[in-house]
Length: 307
Image 1 (cartoon, rainbow, N blue to C red):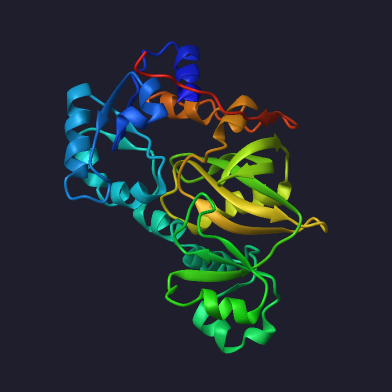
Image 2 (spheres, rainbow, N blue to C red):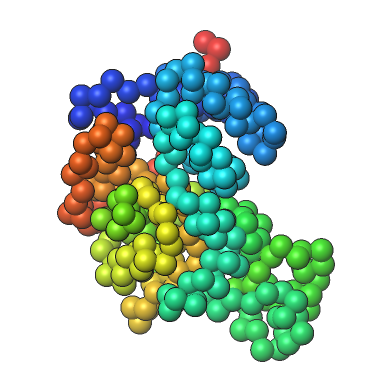
């Protein structure tokens, strides 16, 4: 939100930002938004109608979904919002559907020659557990924020863990440095900027310590994603490892702004600015001339209410 505010100030735009939550009183974002509303869960039948009513009341022109569980719901209702004159910062429903399923992501990337960690469906892996390179990772196909991911050290433990877990997959444990790669695509699906950052320290899936670094292999992957998927627009990010030999492995795509986007913005990857320029009908001043070695050192900050 601060990145969008800074971009609006630089562009001399009068920006109003709204936020919605199931319980705004417990949402830090709702405390710093210009206006906030309580809404039903995004999976409820009335959610889209509630959002449309809020948008109509405030003449909203752009919605930026940031929560994984709401992405496909918005994508499948794109025409409803477009009819109301509202843009969604979101790729096509086909792209979102693949990005939300780690098994589909692995299959599609592998089929298109993008290096991934070796991946197995649990039923197949359990038939021949002796050939798995333990330890391995067990992760939910639709998970986020690193929730539900476990390291499994033996075949017996894997068999025990897999009881009633049909929605999981198994991947090899990668070594090397982990990165998030922030990417921006123009309206034609061309990747115009790629800003990787090294994830030095992560807490509950959110990066706390990070540093920008140019990795040509990740830039090549970002450009290839624009060719594989139809309908990518705006900011997405993907995660991967860079091995000690310089090779890379991609294991996840997020069809949205990542939680570490602020380091990208601070380094000069001004994606929020480009979205506002596009919204105003201007030609965004795209570039890929961001700074390396910019560090983000995050810390907890308190917001107080009821004073």
